[in-house]
Image 1 (cartoon, rainbow, N blue to C red):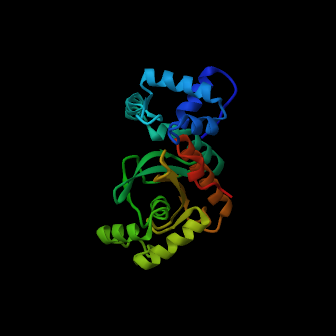
Image 2 (cartoon, rainbow, N blue to C red):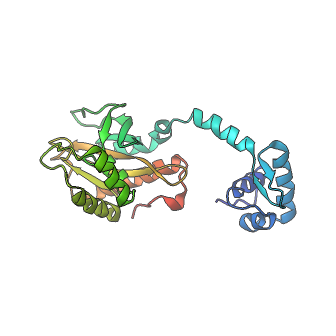
Image 3 (cartoon, helix red, strand yellow):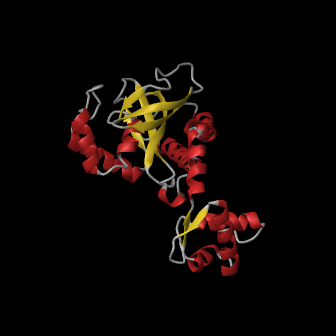
Length: 257
């Protein structure tokens, strides 16, 4: 929670409204925001009148129904690709490679945004295309954020399709590989999904701090070195920025080293 104790009455009201997500009592909200209890109480009364807060019947306060109504209207117009566009364009321009953004959909991920790189070739991918999780950099970045038990359940349902000679087709080997990705922070598709193509990916998190998808850069294998840590850091940094742009809590998003 960001605390803004100075400025206008609007700043204070928004600070109290944000604090309602974590606290019920006036005393706790005052301590969390740094505002006087009298100010907090006055703001809460106004929020109750507007429907953005409600009393809990025990001297405390809860978020009100109007927050849900407003959130529903906003989410119906929310376009993750649009919010991610600035960070993705920056990544494309810094690296020159094709950039993808995909969102998990069950046991697959679906491309929702693609920016062609500054290269004399184009990737065969397209917005709307689905991908397997075990053989792509975005997919492995997503799997690395899931418990091993969930990964094993997914692979049992889908199988581990042999896409190229480099594809990991054993669940135990995949789990070991995912542990390495967690330590490193970013994933590498080392010609595992398409021969001659290498990709570097990182996870993207939603407003709850849950992995929702990932981003990647893609290029010809001879142009993307598998040990290019600088490129990995670029992708991880961009994924961090995309997550924040989508409302992810800063303390739940892995920060690039």
